[in-house]
Length: 438
Image (cartoon, rainbow, N blue to C red; front, side, top):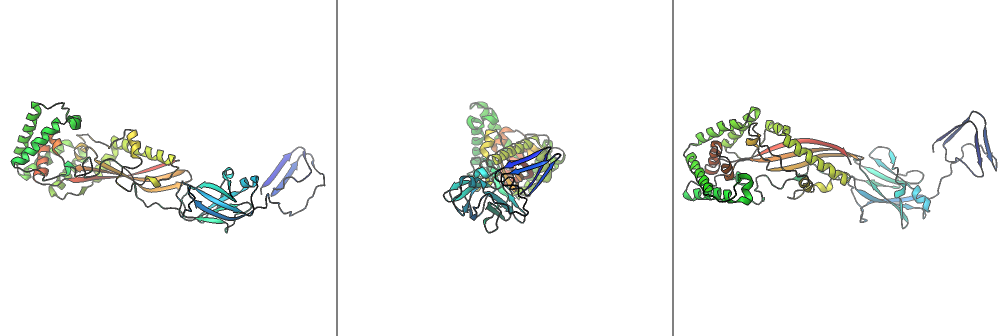
């Protein structure tokens, strides 16, 4: 019941029955006169009981049910579920729309769900409705009523909690694996070449075949056919490797360490030397560095990649009304979002800058993974915390010496593939936030 205030110069009410019966308080104010005429007189009884719009009552509420009619123990945010209300008698058509629904979250007040009257449908002897909840809660209740919500005529709700972090997106390649993900990446192999004639022949064949294999490597080498010059170039590289095999390990690391300074600057030069030091320690494993991570975060290519992935995440949330349940990757697949990245021509971030140091320390992010670490929903708005992990290999393989005729790469190749110094995986961990509506 509300308050009715009427202000008029002349105010008249002519009725044969009753009028304004639902007013909790009625105030009539007129500058002239107030006239009330009733066929049976005007009754000014006090404390008159309000006549309910209907005598039908709700005796039971059931739910939530999924779209197949199965009773659900825990609901997902943003997913529509069916609730059923049993009436004390079969409702009239107009009484179906009069049924009200309310919800209570935790210790808060019961809130009437507005704008859903048209969603009430008669199904047999029950009134049913599809309701969707987008607000986080620990305990909840749904009520159906005509006059007043009753605690005994309600259903309790529990929210299906997602355990974070959840993996939602990853590229086609995996850390430490080759492009087909069925073996170790070539640049992660070590002590896989020998000094004997067979070892040299293996390398000569690989270098020559890489030059000739236009379909796979033309984008790298721009070589269109097998030529005598290509064979000559591969033989020259073999001779160069032989000359580096005659150098001591200390001399090879000296070349490696000194030359890497020419490919880096500032704080990243210090990082690059530290990475060479780690390789000399021969521990393998993983390497991470905050300065290197900060440089990658600030790079335009990383910003572009992160922005593009956020775009497809937002797009998915709008399409699925904030439901992230199907986003989680539980196998070795690339995830539901990957095809959207392909559509937008988004690829792994690359850092081909040979002056800052990102080109020699990272160059091409080999693999990446994106996790949701936290997710909160309030009605149709969301807040999400994301973790981006970039993986790269601090190692090289024979295509690298095919592409780059530099002392640093010959010394690196010999140290890794002949002398057995272990490459390692570089890991960059980036925290991001995403907010929006759906």
